[in-house]
Every structure is written in structure tokens, then in C-alpha cells.
Length: 159
Ligand code: FES
Image (tube, rainbow, N blue to C red; front, side):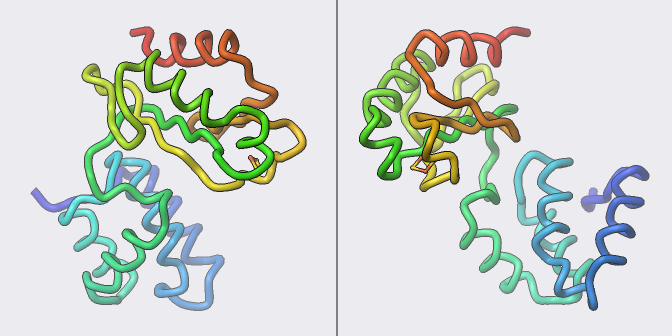
């Protein structure tokens, strides 16, 4: 069955289009909307997006693979992004990443077997003064310690 937005997201789509001069210009938020619903940008979702904004599927694939916030493979329910850029690196990001890998039992780029968490690294998330930090889904978590990270990660895996 072809991808379709829910009624609520159809309304959001109309709001998005109202903010842009043309449909093509709304490509990025349209992809976010579809990904929010489907969890990732499958071929079917990308075909829908291409038709919706009036571009080729090749254009959509180019956009989806250029930006790291778009997922072109199935992923976990939650996304953990650990910043690894200078301030965070100087404040132990490498050790924090290793700790997350160990705690979750996966490597960066992988998803836990229960489908709960995907682990990623990120370039500077503009919270350098509170390094080391990570973003979990849409929220920032700053001045991290291993203990704080354990609490956060364990919370994500509770049913
Ligand atoms: S270096 Fe990590 S938030 Fe800027």
C-alpha cells in the first residue's frame, strides 16, 4: 500500500506549504513530517515525497542522503546523538561514546535488538559551553557524566 499521511499530518502538511513560496521549497520539512510518521524514509515514502513536492525521486534521494537527520534505513524508536566536536571531544566525548556503546550493546550507527535505541555521533550541536552533551530525540542533555547517561539510556529502554 502506498504511503499516506494521517489526517492530522495532512493538516500539518498544509501548514508547511502555506509557509513556503512553492512546494519544492518545502522539501525538507515535508521529509521530516513523513519520517516522523514512518520512522525512516523508505523508497515508498521518498516516492510519496517526490510526488508531493513535485520533484524527481532522485532529487529526494539526494536530499535524504545528504542530511544526517534523515534516515534511509529502519531505525530505533529513540535516537541518541553524542556530540564529538571540539568542546565535547576535549571533555571526554570519546569515552562517553564508548560508554554508550557498552551500555547499549551496540556500535555507533546501530540499533539495539529491541528496536528501542539507535546510536549516532554528531558534529557540534551548538551547546559547547555545556560539554559533553548529547541529543536524545529532540531534547538536549548537557554536562554529562557516565551516571547521568546510564539513567537516560535505561529510561529509553523501559517498556
Ligand atoms: S562541540 Fe559539542 S556542542 Fe559544540
